[in-house]
Image 1 (cartoon, rainbow over the protein chains, first blue to last red):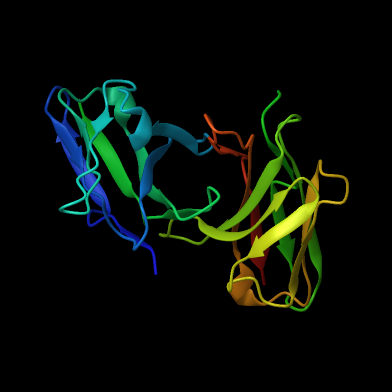
Image 2 (image 1 turned 45 degrees about the vertical axis):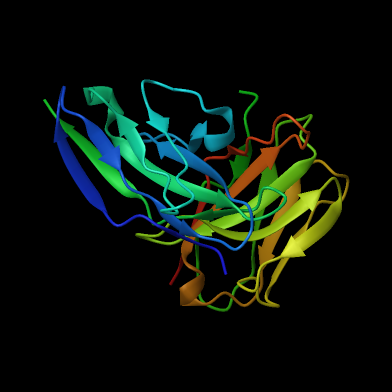
Length: 108
Length: 115
């Protein structure tokens, strides 16, 4: 069965410091992974997907099949990055399995 | 606002009552998904439609739950004989299934409280 694990429920980082949000997955098929973000009082929205290999708002994520990880990184945190972040796995026809989420707080 | 909309945004009901939620997807999107999110958890997949066809249902979707998308546009999710364990945020998402893009756009959710 597919599973997504986000080991940190809460993460606090000083402004300007690097950020890394961890995500590990288990899936027998070929994984497609995403990061979704939910800012305060806003709806869930796609941040980035691994197949596009793009950088959004300074965030990047690399799929590591050997370690079954898809960690989200940003070199210099900004206050507007404070939000809830969810890692998600597409397990067929874009049905998503989400992790439990990490609440990121950027300390000014 | 041309995004996904859901109605109502909040619903309080007594145990045993039936409730119905509505989701209006982005107009050209052919896929529609329902998820449920409880406190401290990520969204959990419930069911999805391609046009009017319901293609898959999660084991989470007990026989008290039914979803429809009669004309391939809006969708309804009905819960019969609600239980306290049904209290959750119900999220709807839509996407335009194509080779190059399948981003899911989420609605604001309907928060259900069963007392």
